[in-house]
Image (spheres, rainbow, N blue to C red):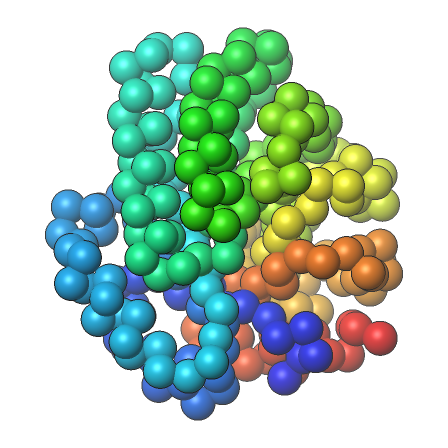
Length: 254
């Protein structure tokens, strides 16, 4: 088990199935609440989940993202997105989340490279979300997905100008989509880094392989982020792969 006490991603719908593994390893969970979950989850469900985590732990949340658009031009779309994000903060308040990871919604093809349009809508979404999150003691981290360079994420973080608001660097998504070298990308986001999503791939798809089984350069990553206080989250799609990544993480850290 790594000295940084990493978190491990788990979808809410699979929580009970994999709870014995989390208990046995005393893992910090990052629970993903997909859009379909919100119609059925009750406060009682969340309190029950919290009770099941009957060992010392911290917890983070991955917010829904399907169909949502925080930088939308259409105010009605932003309104729905904002409501879902506030619903997520309600969950975070009950579970006492340390960080909530959100997607930026930026796609250079959809926005025709008009970062200014996306940024204008994004700030109208993130300012009230971050204000409430900060009041709850929850940090906000915006994850790279299809981004092929990091500068618009840094523009958003700089425009927000809040120590509570930053970036989640996803290794697998970087490996698939980036046209910028790793050290250059990290030099842009390091000042506002809140979380790492750790998984690997062979650049053929978002495979979520264990660390070291694809082509991502983890040695350089951990050298570059040494000394930065951020959450390390393993994103694996099986217990076996999670165990492999947890074991290998120690080998990358000093």
